[in-house]
Length: 470
Image (cartoon, rainbow, N blue to C red; front, top):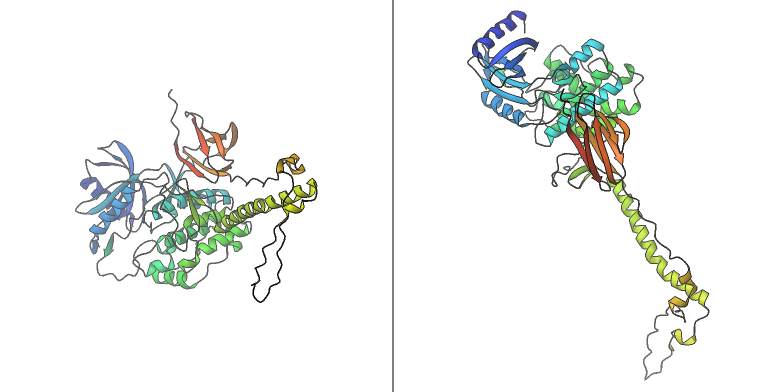
């Protein structure tokens, strides 16, 4: 969008949204939309106002715009820039979003080039948490790209423009692209009208590739060329741009960029967990029926939380438990035999004698009775085995718990009085009671007593630190 057009859009916005928004500054503009920082006058709050001018030759899909804007407004998550309002006028569509003071990932890349691995991992993890929240509610973003991932001054990432896409089409223009930006679109997104969460994972893989290498995996001069590249060409291996990346990082990014959706990771959280192998993806909202569908990673619901717990590991735990039970059962009769040997030989009356196996023509042979093990002649209390401590089966190992902590703004985490790191963080803790404390200069400390059950995954991810009163 050229500068004269941007100026004309501003005049239209000021005229048609007068009394509702006071425009402060132009934030950014693209080929189809303009974003301003504005004051929403009725609510006395600062917002990001996105407007889509309805120019000649363009027919808006108003029903789809209202439907998607309503869905976006219903999404409430700490890593999503929430849609606050939306509407239409004679000359434009508009929606307002939570204003994030900071920079987009596109700004960070433009200013500093490739990001360091730790920064990239933190941003991708937070974006993936937001996408997973949407996916579990049947919502696909569909237009994820660096300019739609916003990072504030506390390095807190928020995904914006969730599921508001393709709200109008040029009249008479033939286009197979249903949504999104061609540089970040999954191969199936170029032709299919409906795409799923795997398309968002592909887009996040492109963002990861670009953050780490400083380049897009595919560059074309037209949508048709971009479609061909995404559908048929392999991206340049990451190691040609960054030779300092661990192998599992390169493998994770290239798997997320697989041409077929089924060859990518089961979920977007599996993708970012592979990027940092020691990171555990937070579980979803506590719905007991919210289990992974067929083909996704195996999870169990424990105390209302979904916990990453591979089936192989579960099988091993079950096998060990079975062996312990069988071992205890097998030891009991042998304890009695050992006790009888120490107490002396058994009396003849205590041994069952087998009957004769001979028979006569008028007498049918009786079946041979089963021979029993010798029983001790003295009561168990008199045997030496009583003086020995009983053989006990070893106690089953106690599964540790997992604590996921996040706060706004970020803070230092103390567990049982010991500093363990900064939010966001995933912690493995022993089952039992613990004291969690999150502190930050200028804010009231947060403290809570928690109780972790074996194997439980507990989330404390919505901690809001309150500013100290002067």
